[in-house]
Length: 131
Image (cartoon, rainbow, N blue to C red; front, side):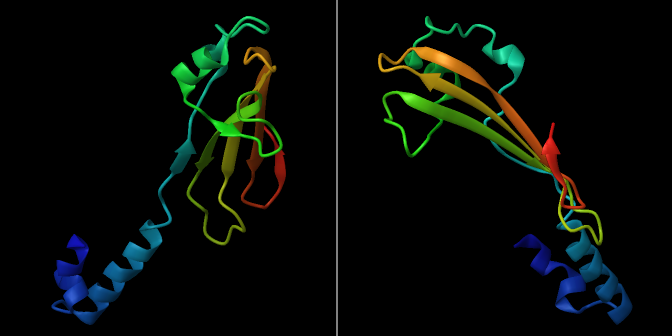
């Protein structure tokens, strides 16, 4: 890790400067926005038609997705989840987190039967609501 070679970490600076550097390092580690998953927007799915679009077409554009455990992987419900967490504010119970899920329901022939979006947000206070 390159920051371990810094004079502040090695103790080659004044104690107060070293303490300030380490405090700043700890505080900044919680300041990054993180995103995970596949972000799919409403504009990206306008081409999907219920009863027409094949599973292979959806997989070619968005990947395999997550198959719900209670469904057959060849058909059933598949979801694509995107989670974004903002930096946690000092003294806040939670970081503001937004999760958006695009789901597709296939019939036994592997054709889109239905699809849609779910979106929910966790506020820093811990309150959960829809987007």
